[in-house]
Length: 425
Image 1 (cartoon, rainbow, N blue to C red):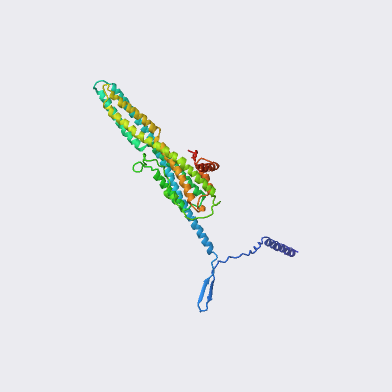
Image 2: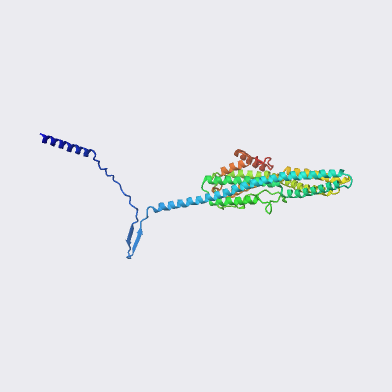
């Protein structure tokens, strides 16, 4: 009985061991079929010719074209990156010039105000001394001191006026003010080209030429590079390179209708507007510029002349003589002339007329050069150019077309148009 019980206990333990083993059995993962891609290889074909020679040829490598395309894209990306980097370098130079011209403009504004106040104070002080000396009787030391002081002050005012009238600080400040505005305009144009994408090497070259042309048109230094403040004749300012309007193509095409925004009507419209600019705006600014130039020349000569006469006359003042009238009147007139010339900034007005004349000349050359280009695909889009021209003249597109129609009708009737092209200034 005991042996039977022992056998049952042993059987139960073996059964429980098998159950434990079966419960912790981990099944093998299923096999997932996969394939290893084959490396593309070239196959060598051997052909035997009729003469017994062996001709070997290889099949085309399937990745070769893709590699060529990828290499071309890399080179294009590097080229565009280089062009963009060059344009950013030009932008850095322009930003530096803007800062320099702005600083110089402030400096020359200070010159104008400080020199004007100083010279007028010197002139009026000398005039007062001459008047006091005329009332002094007897050949005394105070009379001699007044005479010498007034003579020296008039002489100093004459020298300072000669220098001030030569450099025209108000005109110098206006030059730098205009240069700052034009450099900012060029900066915006380059930034627009970069934003639109696909800049070319021609854009870099033209941008550098425009920067150098602006440097030449509005120089920073005074000695050796200063613009002539009293030219023989009024001429508009030129701040664009000579190569900007060279004809790029002599290609001729017959059909121009509705290509790249251009049509025969649009070309006739722009020609009529340019004729109005020539006959009215440019002629008017040339007339005003010549008037400002003559006034500035006259005032620049009269101021030092009167202070010089006062300096000579003050040496003969004394003992109630009538000679005191000369320095007192001359000094007063010199102070008034100096205040009108430099306080009224006649030189600045003359430079403003030069800039306006240059603006219309640039507009004229731009339109004429564009219309001379026979290949309309190489031109700027006609509708965009019409809109830009209207904005530059302070008009809407419809007003620009009305002006062209009015100009054509007046020309056919043989009468002069009574309207200026620009409504902006």
